[in-house]
Amino acid sequence: MTQHTDERAPRTTQETPPTGRRLPLLDVLRGAAILGTLMTNVWIFTGPGAEWGALEAGTDTGAVEAVFSVLANGKFLSLLTILFGVGLAIQYASAARRGQPWPGRYRWRALFLFAEGTVHFVLVFAWDVLMGYAVTALLVAWLLTRSERAQRRVMWWAAGIHLTFMALLTAALATAGGDDGGGDGGGVSGEVVDLYAHGSYLDQIAFRLENAIALRMEPVLTFCLLLFLFLLGVRLFRAGAFGADETGRRLRSRLLAWGLGLGLPLNAAATLAGPDFFLLARYGAAPLLAVGYIGLIGALVDRVRRPGPLMTGLTSVGRTALSGYVLQNALCVLVSYGIGLGLAERLGDTGPWWVVGLWVTVCAILMAGSTLWLRRFSAGPLESIQKWALRH
Image (tube, rainbow, N blue to C red; front, side, top):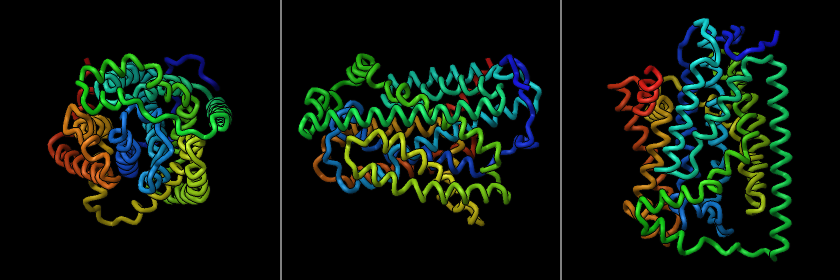
């Protein structure tokens, strides 16, 4: 029977694990998602105009950046979103085992995440994802008190609305591009480029606040996608897709076949089609490839008999995902912008390989740092602050 109040204890389902033990694959996937999002964001930090430049990027993407785009742009963001849905389903199941009301105190956790995202947006990175996740989590937390049928209906309606909206926006962009005669859009203004290359930290904060509406449009335009991916994560968790048993392996093999089999060619085609198809590439085809990544990473983890440095590092980053996400952005700010080393301007004409090197270096720092941190502490620094704040 459908519940009619969001304060009732959640129902225990057959898919709920009997204990609260961690699923190792989830930590590896979270680590891959965190480092994978940087594969896209690193080009934002190092490009002309940085955060604002991402809105006015031209058409002269090089081969290396194009490869990164096919493999990463929107894919690991979608994977991270699915995993947020998985995390929400795990917390729902935990509340069921304890007989606690739902959403109950989870509302405060979502609101705290929104506050963290707001601080991150203002002080570090304009393309923050935490604020959008917090709002979506509040809605999905309520939806988990509804029937399975209602959840499926919302999930597929959200997907349909999102794809229709992206198709209409893409058609509008293509039409506008044709009317303009295929111009390059004028590039990024020199004033904005100078702001990130030579402006003060306070000037950059003021710029984000003055342009907050434009810089916060992504989670608004893609809200239906976030809703779909959260609910997809819930369904995959309840189906057992992340378990180490035969059911999990069978489901992941299907995700691998469908996700990579359709996702790779669709993403390559959308990327090669040009900037007019950016929305369909990042928000249409990318989630399909993200599902394939779950299957691919799962297949690789299944074959690991003794975890090496790479898997250990990914697991550690996954266990400190929030801290790692914020830290990698802060490091790129200090390396790329004029308030730090200013390498975006100094190395801007030397080619793309220094950007690839920056990504590799930051990934190595996060994997090594999180591994060392977890030898002494049970959670990441921001995760610990969140737990402490929610206890008081």
